[in-house]
Image 1 (cartoon, rainbow, N blue to C red):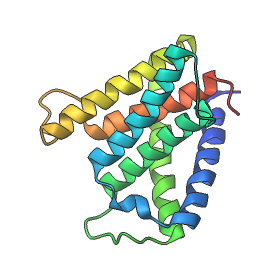
Image 2 (cartoon, one colour; image 1 turned 180 degrees about the horizontal axis):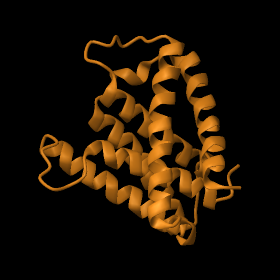
Image 3 (cartoon, rainbow, N blue to C red; image 1 turned 135 degrees about the vertical axis):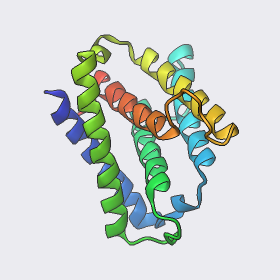
Image 4 (tube, rainbow, N blue to C red; image 1 turned 90 degrees about the horizontal axis):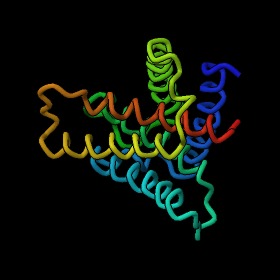
Length: 178
């Protein structure tokens, strides 16, 4: 399967789960400030790394589900970044779906552009390396958040969330997730 098709398939799965949770919980995620979203992504990525390093998993939650959660938390961060000031905490399911779809489409465009330029080098990577890249991006985001986002030469927080989302998709593809 080609990368764009795989991306679409995986994002559809992530979207279905996200919208089901929106049905159950509403838009409770809207209360999270960006550093809290960053920390949620960290918790997920750190759990994956711990399992990769120790080979032991005591909680039954599947590692693939952690990568799905990383995708969805990155999309939460991107939605939070781009929703207009004054957007109410409670949003309709339709508004959430539209915001989710917009950010997922933006990420798809980025993925295709980078895959073109990098020649899909990620396909030769280990999932553990992708996990490390996600954790490195998280540390960069935390640093940027700590300095108020005032980067001199670095990519933006938005760019880091977009990269982490795509890394999580790559990990799912490499792990054989369909």
